[in-house]
Amino acid sequence: MPATAYLTGLGRYLPGEPVANEDVARRLGGVDKRTDGLRARIQRANGIRQRYYALDDEGRTTELNEELAVHALEDALADRGIAASDLGMLACATTQGDLLVPGFASMVHGRLGGGPMQVLTASGVCASSIAALDAAVSKVRLGDHPRAAVVGSELASRWLHQRRFDGVEDHLDAHFLRWMLSDGAGAAIVEFQPRPDKPSLRVDWVRQVSLAHEHEVCMRAGLDGPTAVAGRTWQDYDDVATAEKAGLLQIRQETAVLDELAAAGLAQFEELVDRGLVDLKKLDHVLCHYSTNAFRDVVFDALSARVPGMDTSRWFSNLETCGNTGAASIFIALEEAWRTGRFAPGDTILLAVPESGRFAFGFAHLTVVAPRGSTR
View 1: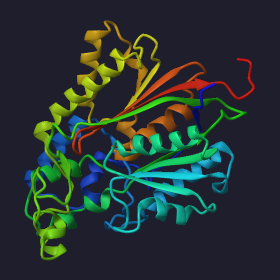
View 2: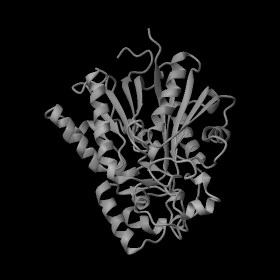
View 3: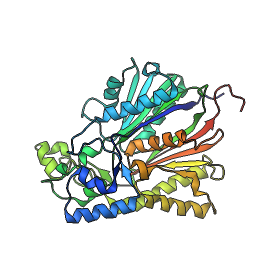
View 4: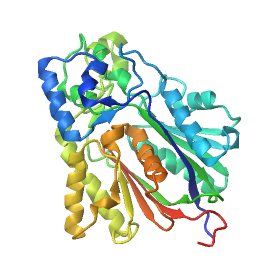
């Protein structure tokens, strides 16, 4: 029997109380008339109704990114009924940790505890979650570890507050992400066999692909344009303050190429279908991370053309209620769908994560299996 891996516990953590759209500007600080109009348009388009910030009303950070990650991991461990000491590996995904050095996974492990274990930091943007999952699943399948944990965690809000924009060269592409991103963490436990007391999610396959060879940078921080040139990154400026004034420490998005991202993502999905890795007629659930409902509608239209009458109720997203939490989003959505009884043994699930950083995509296919030893 080929070695495989199973997701046996899921957890999430969303900091503080939910922040409604009308309270976002107050929480992140003042806006001028020009950018306030942009905020209203973005909020109408993305469909997010509430999100969470690890910020208090004065804009002070209330929790570290590593703390968000540990909360989600502890939730997943509790769901599985095991301790951190039972883990052999910890794979952590984030866009930006709390520190420049050491790696995010080392900081999370130090706070989580549990004893000696292999750690991995998967950095990038949204698809780093699938990279971390892939690493943990691969090590479990190899037999190197009987159990591993994966977590995606983001604390974007500290870079979105008004203080990061005061006295800084104005870039509208930075204001776009300011009203899109929020904080949170999601985690999963990976094991070599299903759990005995409840259903598990068998990991059938994981796929990642980068199209950076065909595209310039789309989402960035630390660079003053879409192309990296020696002497023009944030580390090459005379001091960090100068780089920040130039806007290099803001998270920025080249919105003009987002239609290309959607098209490229659909092409990658179509390739999975053509290779027989995804059977659209037998696919029960799709959890796709996207930043705006507009992208969802594009995907629905394209798939409906290929599968007439396709039931869009197969698709699950909690973007509207949990916000866009980057690398954490796919695990936060998976945890909610699992906890609320959306899945049943035998169901198949596709996870899909597009990343606009420099056009990367991550996919994973799961099957719900009955408890170990069950005759069902």
